[in-house]
Image (cartoon, rainbow, N blue to C red; front, side, top):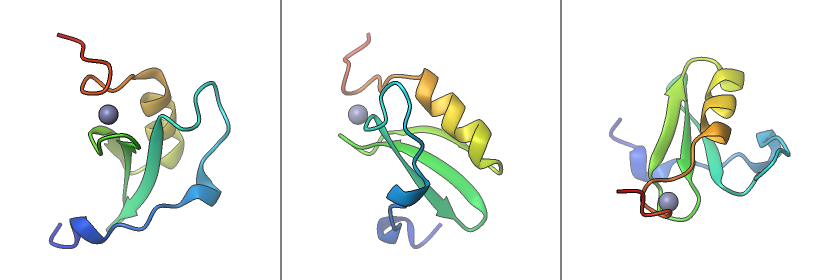
Length: 68
Ligand SMILES: [Zn+2]
């Protein structure tokens, strides 16, 4: 958790989907995190990359999209 600012993006692991640039995947201490590429808002997290990817792909960033 302390190295949160040093997460390395893993573009090679990003799957091309409907909106592939809406989130970025990171592997942090065994936990996958999908965060918005625009503002860094965490869209999803979990131990399974597939689930995190799917969850993130379905969500749109509430910050960037200004959903009240
Ligand atoms: Zn955002």
